[in-house]
Image (cartoon, rainbow, N blue to C red; front, side, top):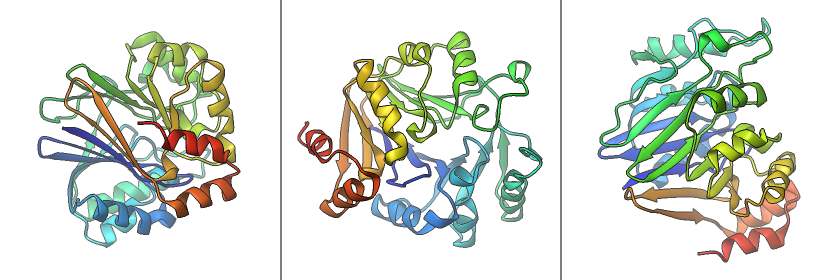
Length: 278
């Protein structure tokens, strides 16, 4: 089975894709979530990965790489879609620091561009990104995130990093984005373009934040008639497919539920409704 496990972080992203003996971390959380990421990997029984794919060089997506390297966690290659010396607003230098740490550890760096594929057995893993000739000054680091379109058989999932409106418009124009499952961009902290959501037309959407900041995302999904959505921060999510259908599991504990409802002001009835679904 092709399997995607989503680490239950708040305010950061970390996912693990496995299939036919291959494994890839998609983002690695930030420096403060290193212990959670380590526990996540231990729980699902992973002690090495072939790739770490970084969607974009923001601390909440790549900051965890330093702790992984410090612990000696085996990584086959680090994949980036950004220039090695990329910086934002003359302040953010984490890309340079991450590349330096990876190279010092002897981990190969793979530079990919839009349309490139990542070898993953009989599954198709395609990198989608705003092409260099379509990037404009107003497109920030989030807008330039690397998106992964994963297809196996008749099943597909779209992992969107933190893409915002400008890049959503370009990607909708250039690519077939249809997917069964959508990772809502940017932790659900802002609306996505209606045409982007319509192009993907997901059967289920998950949001990797699960805080009061992501209420706008859930309200948009409800308004547009997409009733199947959930927060990854409620507990480890596991998506599995044999190429014909998806099964979805969420390892949800009572303590996580209480924490989510109290801390992030989530609707407890909505949480219980999700948990009662097959």
